[in-house]
Length: 465
Ligand code: ADP
Image (cartoon, rainbow, N blue to C red; front, side, top):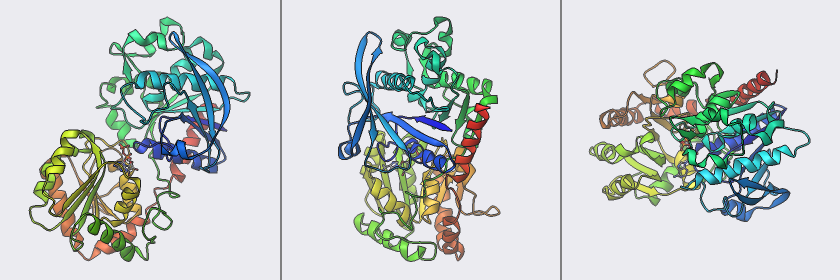
């Protein structure tokens, strides 16, 4: 079975968040199950594309409304990923030093059209086209309704929603950018009077998945305006929990770590990284270290961090280190907090993130929305106890220490009080006898892709029958 994943991000080529990690891992694990999975993504101007070699395998031109653009399909040649990776190069539109900005409508439409134009030329068509998030959300509609893609109509499509907050809206004034289609069907791209790429994909894809079962249920109640649609389409919707790529995220082999460690060397292994972090960021190694890694946005509860940290640091008995960027106001407030037992790295740093998963004692995730969340699974793998709000994938993966079989700290709801109470509970747990034993236990929890990749393959097979 031949699967074509189409995505705006793929690790390690271009990563903004969890979407990249999933698209960079799932095809590899699907391949191990006997499917041939490949990825198509835009060709951005970044360090990875500058430093690696690509071979041109196709070229053509697309019409975007009344404008024409040349495009090339480039295949990555010198960086073994475990699957074939193709990039759509449209120099005038896509080759920018960012992934997302305010010109996304034209850029991602051009990307989707060029991808389908290229697929039209395949002698052997893919068995499944798997689209990810709104950036590729018009593909199922175009395959069904755009006259030029008539021959792709019978290929089953799957949409995975990694985040339903962002939906790729644009006005009907731009409808001419979509390759001509039967206008009676314009309702399939519309939601509440605008063109909505994610809503269109939910309507037109043969199957819709979210990245955790709880997130699917939560979206039926709250999905930034798409609740009714998801309830209506619910027979074809399922939640499949993401996995983690243990080739990238394993303390035994992780090349970004200072020293590798296993379950039997977890205490000394974590100590090396905590020491490095505490020296680098002027923190006290004797105190339990809480970290946050991620986007500083409301979904992650980040607007409350300045107040949460201020409160949690009052007793002087913990340290906090934050890595992330996002809302400028939150960044500014965090930068102004006193640097006593507290520090930040405002920005994006993949290596530092790995060292933090290894060196921290606790990982904070007070998310208000968390479709799956990968950070909590990485932290388990590295022997770091997650402190999470019971939402979405966090609810599906973390059990509170007070529950049977529990190993993390779980709070219900995101307020300054609830999060600081959870931090206090974690701090008390840090000095308990069972704390070190728990580290070995959490490292052994299997969140690899093996099971989830099987669920996807099962789903593809059901669509082919
Ligand atoms: P989301 O996709 O909502 O941002 P996920 O938990 O699914 O959240 O995935 C986040 C991924 O991005 C993780 O691999 C995390 O380590 C990484 N990440 C987020 N922010 C940063 C940052 N500032 N520096 C390094 N890695 C980051």
